Length: 229
Length: 411
Image (cartoon, rainbow over all chains, first blue to last red; front, top):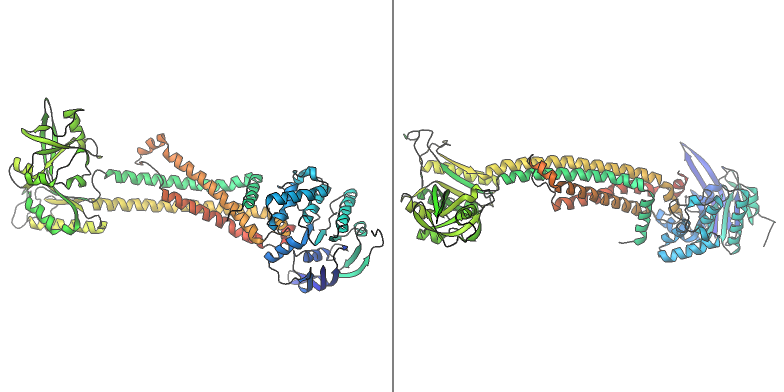
């Protein structure tokens, strides 16, 4: 599903360059539940952004769903994101003036789906995250956990190949963290590839494979022993 | 391309952000309001000017004679100049190509009576073309015609107020009136936009007057309507040439204004025209300045709005929005706001210009019927749409170019 070979990425800082990713090799197959662990500055967010086509890599190869990602323009990247990827962010990133339902339906709007149909599908997904009764509430009327569930519904609504979650529990307390992780596991159990970035050991433990990143290189890549279903 | 979803997005964005929409709309509405008012006032001023000359045709030109003020070829100062039929014929033949209408005029004051009513009126003996030069409007019957001239017919065309004085509400056409002792048949009643004095006049054929009043071929004036195809400069040149030729023909010193002069509407029109053009120029300058200030105001607000929405655009892009859809959304929103606001300004402006009480006050300052023409309205609308486009396009294009990762980080 995701295949990365010798990936390099650096950011210019003044005249110097900050080498963030120093040759990453990673292969994630369809249906995996992977977490990338690392402290801040380890390059894990950069990796996610590149995988999520929100940023471009400098060197190496990246195949998404078998397609080589190279010299994408904004338009092509937008189409690929819409088709293959679903995002869950740490800060939820819901549009504040749209209701939960409209937020969930937005990716379908960019897919070109008719309004009636996309609202119907969005409602199904909201019900899936148990937020049906909150469909017409604005994000600021929801709790943090509810917002993140709306964001997850929004990430799933286009039935993407991969769900990318960037510190999905970073802004949540431990109870809601567990809820969100349960939800992500359920999604994975239905066959979706889930790719989580975190610096919390407890979160990583709940995934099936943990990749540890330090200073831009992978230091370990192992399957978790617990809870195999 | 009508996209109901796009419009829904725009209306949602506008209604959820009322303050900023109203703010950006206000600048444009105000600019257009000022523009409309300025334009209306200048139109009013130019209306006043053209009205001052509305009595006569715009291509009016008349030859007047009096006494000489300079000796010439041994002839003395103070000699009285008299126009004759041969001078009329000379003008007719010599300048035929430059003339649209031509008439002679003999001015008299006469006493007219019908039954027991009578009064003094001014009489002008004329050719049929006189109707067009004086902009005489025939209400009933007809004007003097060529047959009257040939037959030296004793017919008279009377002004609306003359008819009212003598006939009241009774019909006048076909009735005979007594003009200083001679009986004439009324063949027409006319009105004139030049005011009451113009409607107290009467007209008869020039040949009839020459036969009855002195049995000579004297004329008081020659009145010409120059070919409207002539430019103002050509018409002025034509008037000057005719003035020189006639002075030469009548043995008048070439510079003797008193003996013979030509009053030329082209000269007056040129002066007024230049003045009005200058006024419009000033208004267009100030008006477009105001509009540009409005556009810059909108641009500023759009830049702020787009900065504020950068994160939202980042989210939209992460969800699959293409850059063109972001630019399109912002531009469409801006055009909508500018157009609506502009129309509010325009309608408010036109409404103010149409206020009765305001117009009465303005009339005292020589501003008559201030208004904006449809072409100006269309022009302003196009300007608005274009300015809305420009105001939003540049900042939106920049915003859409920001990488989603950078946009998402924005706060």
